Image (cartoon, rainbow, N blue to C red; front, side):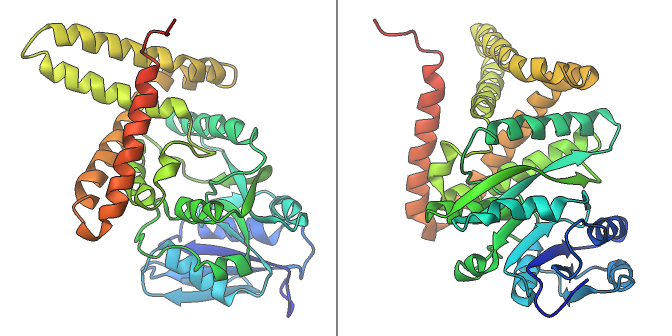
Length: 358
């Protein structure tokens, strides 16, 4: 599969991935892309299971090992070892469809394009994973309307290798899989680089969150690490090409409802006000529910509950991230900028409730 100068390098960071890596590599070995045009690189990020042994069974897959340092460091190692001009990324728990490489490469025919984002699918039958898939598809609908994007997730992503190297790759201060891929794409977009969404470049995710507890944990972690991203890119808190604007309103509504509920023990009027904001939250979920109803009725029925969990977990995680990160003195300028943007987000959200001016 690999010659001396493949055009493409597929890089997979793997940590304790013995349960999923075989399906990932098998799918990559069956691509419609011409043999010899691409190489596969797996970086074992300090696994303590049989991940490396499983990878070693695949001929022509290049395996590198490092002490556990997180996916950012693993991807950067892969980029440094890559022979291809284009580097594609997927995760060890993903199965790219057979034309994934070809689809990912298509936008790169435009020399101005430096990054590409693909999509998720799932074969999971449980309700929560089906909701999660609908959540992704809702965001994909948003991104498909954008000519260029600023948000690239590495489960299905591609970049020009020289651009990554020139911009120091992924930020290794992110110790776990969190928002390190978002930070990279925000950083590149800020410099004027152009990236595109390619909805046909699909990978099957073997493990969307399986239940509410796992879903909560994932969203809480995202909320926490979003603070780190937005300390560096506060303008993206106002808008990015991936995050629905309604989500920010929902987080605000859940926070206000919770506060009013607590104040209700002091004065019962606050409970009535909390009921109003809670009802407003439910109304805000209707567009998602109606869209989901056309695809998966059972998942649509539970959507308001999971949208509540999403808003609460993201908001709580973000608050925890603020409490921890804003104590760092050397980030004073970033704190001031982030607070300014937070005020803008609040003001924009409150305008929804303001009566129109004559």
